[in-house]
Image 1 (cartoon, one colour):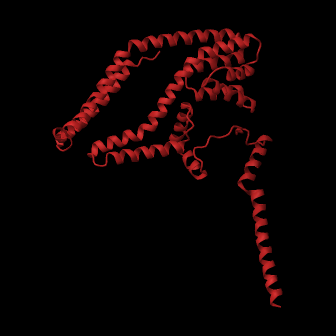
Image 2 (cartoon, rainbow, N blue to C red; image 1 turned 180 degrees about the horizontal axis):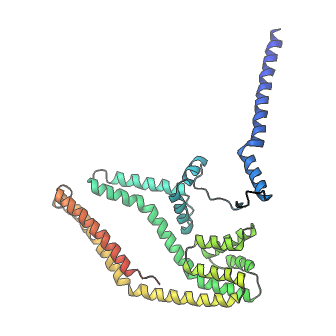
Image 3 (cartoon, one colour; image 1 turned 120 degrees about the vertical axis):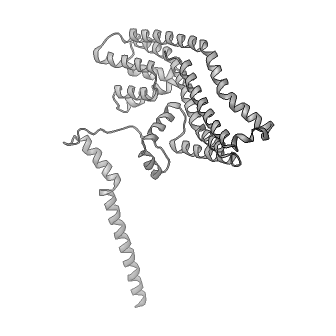
Length: 323
C-alpha cells in the first residue's frame, strides 16, 4: 500500500511539473518576446494599416555591451550613441563598454598616482588620465580620416574608369572594395554588403557618409545620387571631383607647411610652464612648495592655468585654417 501511494505521489509530482513546463512553453511560443517580434515583423511586412510609417531594419544592430542589461541601459543615454559613432569613425574594435572600462581604469590610475599630491594637482592629473582613452580614440579617428581623404581622389578616378568600361555602380562598389587599400576599401565593401542585403543604395551611401564625415566624400555621394535621379555623365563628374580634391589637398599641405612655426610655438608655450614646474618639483621641491601651500599662490596658479588654456585655444584657432 505504501509503495503504491508513494508511486502515485511521484507520478503526480512529475505530471504537475510537466504540465507547468508545457504551459510555460506554450506561453513563450505564443506570447513571449521572440513570438511578439516575429508577429510584429509579419504584420509590418504584410502592410497592416496604421503601421505603414514603421520600417524594418535588416542590418545587425551594433551592441554597446556584451551583457543585455548593460546594453539596454547604455542605449538610453544620447551621449553614448555619439561615443559609439566616434568609435566607429575611428576604426577601432572597441565597444562602448570596453571604452568606459578603460576610462575608469585610467581614472583610478591617475588618482593612485597623485595620492600624495596636493588636491588641485591630483584632480588635474586624474582628469588628464581619464581623458587619455578619448584622446587616443580621437587621434585614431583623425588619422583614419586623413588617410581616407588621401585615398578619395584615387577612388573617384577608379570609379570613373570602371563606369566608362561599362560596369554598373553596384559592381563598381565591389571592385573598389576589392582593389583599393584599407581603410576606404572596407567602407565600400560595407556599402556593397548593405545593398546586397536589400538596403536602398541611397541609404547605404548615406550610412557610409555618416561613418566617414568628410566633405569631399559627401560631394562624391551627392553627385552619385543626383545622377541617379536626373541622369548625366557620372564618370566626368567624378573626374572633376577628383581634380578638385587633389587641388584642395595640395593647398592644405602648403598651408600646413606655412603654419608649422605657429603650431610649434603653440606647443612650446602650452607645455613650457608644466615642464618647468615639473623640473622644479624634482630638483628643488622646497623652493616651489609654497605654490600649493600659500592661498595667494594657489589662487594665482589657477588664474595662470586658465590663461594658459585660453591662450592655447586661441593659438589653435589662429593657426587652424579651414580650406
